[in-house]
Image (cartoon, rainbow, N blue to C red; front, side):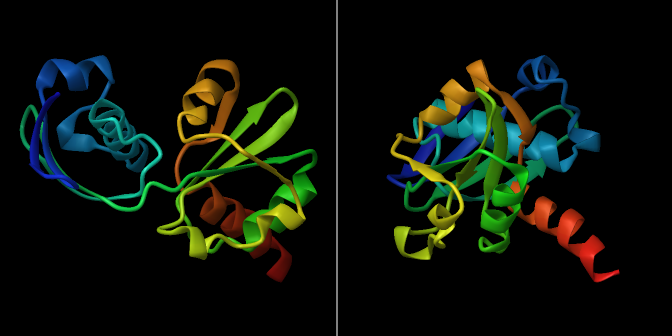
Length: 165
């Protein structure tokens, strides 16, 4: 990845054909998960893993141009013993950027609100883990990712939409 700093919070990132191939991504037919993986890899390279970011992605024939504007770096982790508790916590989060993983027999929900003041009271249903944003890398290595992007929104759509029928 070729990264150019525009200013302290804005970056332009060029992802070349060989890098996309190593991630099994084709610019001509990208999925939502592909875009998520590209942005996450770029944030890791910039040193802003766990930060909330606004992105604009321009696919070319063989490469991608990604513009990133970093927001406040706020990441929270919550561990849940059961699925019901996880769903109750997820229902409070709206469409907050999130990832769901399993680690050591527990569900771990990673939440990335725009600011600390936007964090809902998820701790009522699960244990808040006092971990830095880099804990996501530990989870990725030692756990299992269940829903990689927009986990909260996907859980709510699937499980609460069925209750309304």
